[in-house]
Length: 214
Image 1 (cartoon, helix red, strand yellow):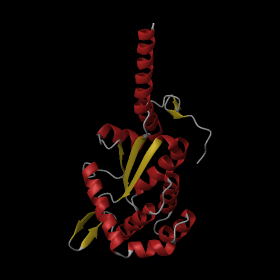
Image 2 (cartoon, helix red, strand yellow; image 1 turned 180 degrees about the vertical axis):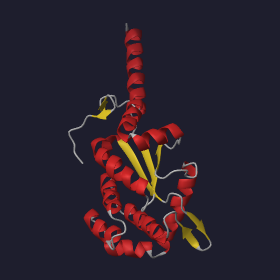
Image 3 (spheres, helix red, strand yellow; image 1 turned 90 degrees about the horizontal axis):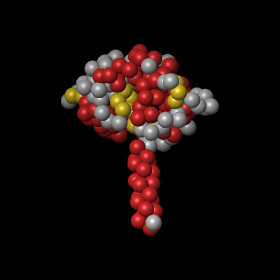
């Protein structure tokens, strides 16, 4: 009888342990650009509306760099110098925000009107509660430059180029199907990934079930 109880206890422990291991946060990395129309569309219409509903299950990683590249002359960005400046500002701000929902809120705000003077480095920074002066110092100094170099290293290591911006990567493993599905239908793709992580109660038929609104 004691042997039977021991076996049952071991099985239960293994089952619970396996379940806990399986139900780890889903890492979602978004490699984007501050002035990219596709990045803007994805962040405003897909990432921001859905993120707050499932944020407790996610580990979000936002990386502003995209198809830019560095050289001895500095950085060259897909949408010109204004985007290099914008990417640097985004990096500086995101570093100073610990809460992932607040990060998404900042990026969502910044993407609405990036060409409006003061919008990304003042208006949206103030809304996020970060010091405007700190951000100014960061993006005009070696700190901002180093953050862009770090963003470049990660972007090139974790994406195929990138070939398309934004690039969406789950659990640090890029594949074309995930990229295409996430860009076109982020909510259902997110649900599929969350279910694979053991969060079977979060979605129904590819739709997030949550009382939260963003």
